[in-house]
Image (cartoon, rainbow over all chains, first blue to last red; front, top):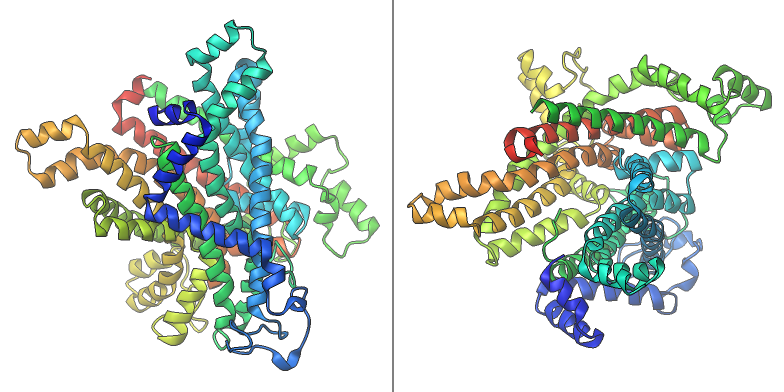
Length: 296
Length: 335
C-alpha cells in the first residue's frame, strides 16, 4: 500500500517497533490514548485486589448505606442497595474490557480468514463469501444487534454473540481488499515461483502485510464494542443487574435522577474514557501504520 | 448515465432482497421457537401448535420464505403482541417521529460539521484545529444515552429551560397529522405556539443524535480539505490570482464534499439505528423506542419490522448518495 507501511514492514522488528514508538510518542493525543488504554487494562487486571469493598461486587445489600453522596468512605457514593460505586465501576472495567476484546478478536478470527480466502481465491468462492457478508451489512449495527438479541434472548453472552455477528463482516471487507491488492505484488509472484505453498504464502506474506490496517481497526473496534455492550446493557438487553456492567449501572441510575445524580456519573465517565482511549490510540496508530487510509 | 443509474438501482434491489433474507434467517435460525414467539410469552403447548399452523410454520422453509415475501410485498409485517395492532400500522404511526428527529439531527451535523471541518483544515495544527479534533473524537466516544441524561439533568432539571422528554407536553393534544412531522405540520397550520413547543422538545434529542454524525462529518471533511488544499489545481488557482475565499469554497470544498457525501449517506442509516438509544432516554415515541420496548417484552415481529425499515432507509440513503456521486463526478459514469 503506502511507502511508509512497506518500509516499516521491511525493517527488522526491533527497529520497526522503536520507530513506531518514537512516532507515537510525538503526538499528544496518541499518548493520551495510550495512557487511557494502559490505565483501563491495569484497572481490569488488578481491580479485584485494589477495590475498597470487594464483597460489593456481586451485590451485597446494606440498605442503611444506600444512595450516599460521595464521601471519604465512598469516593463516588453508594448505589440503591448500599454498594460502593467506585468498587463496582472498577470491576466494570474488567467486564467491559474483556467483552470488548472478546468481541473484536472473535470477529477478526471469523472475518480475516474468510476475507483473505475471498481475495485470493477469486471467482465463485469470492462472490459467495462477499455476498453473504453484504447480507449482514444491509442493516446498521445497533438495530441488527437488537434484532439478534431479540431472537436469542437478552443477557450479556447473547449480546456478545449478537455483536460478534454484527462485527465480523467489516473484517472480511478489510482483509479481502488487502489480499486483493497484495496478490498483485511482485513478492507474492516471487514466492510462488520459488515454490512456496499457498498456505505458506498466506501465513508468511499476505497476513503480515495486512497487519497494519488490521491493528488499527481492532483498536478502534474494541472501543466501539465497549460502547455497544454498554448501550445494550442500558436498554436492558445486555448484562443484567447486579452485574457491575457500566451500561446496566447507568440504566438503574437513571431511575435515581435527578436527586441522586452522582450515581450515573461514574459509569458514564468510565465508558467515555475507555472508548476515547481506544479511539485515540487507533487514530495515532493509523497515522503511523496506515497513513493513506480514509478516516470516518 | 442511464447504464450507471440502472446498475445502481439493480444493486439496491439486490440489497433489499438480502435484507429480507437476513430478517427471515434471524426469525427462523434463532434458537427460540418462532411459533412460541408468535403465540406470545404465556401460551400453552396447544396454543403454540395452533400458532405454528396459523402462521404456516409447519411448512418447509422455502415455502415459508415465499409466504414471508408475499406478506411483506402487501405491507404485512405481522402483528404486535403488546399493542395488538398490525406492525405496519404501528410503524406508520411511529416512523414520522423518528424521521423528524433524524432530519433535524442530520441538518445539525452537516451545517456544523462541514464549516468546522473547513476551519480545522485551514488552521491545520493550530489551536482551533486541535480543539475541533478533540471535540470530534469526544463526539464519537461519548455514550449517547449518558450524554442525553446529562443534557436532561442540566437543561431540563437544573436550568429548567427545556422539557425533559416526549414530543409534546402531556397536556397538549397532538394535531391531526398532515406530514406527521410536528415542526412542519405546526407551520403549515400557522400554529406557532405548537411549533415552539415541538421545537423545545426536539432540540435536546436532536443534539445528542447529531453528535457522532457531526464528529464524523467534521473528521472526513477536515482530512479531505487538507488533502485538497495541497493539490496542484489549488496552487494553480492561487497563481492565477483567484481569491482565497473562492479557492476554499469553490475549488477545494467542492472536491472535499464527495467523500463527505458518502459519510452523510452512511450516517443517515446509522442515525436511524442509534436513535434507539436517544429515543429510550427521551421517551421519544419513534420506531427506536418501539423496537426496544418490543424486544424487552419478547415481542418479535415489531423488532423485525423496525429492522426492515431501518435497513430500507440505509439502502435508499446509499442509493441516493450513489446517484448524486454519478451526477457530481463524471468519471464514475464512464466506469
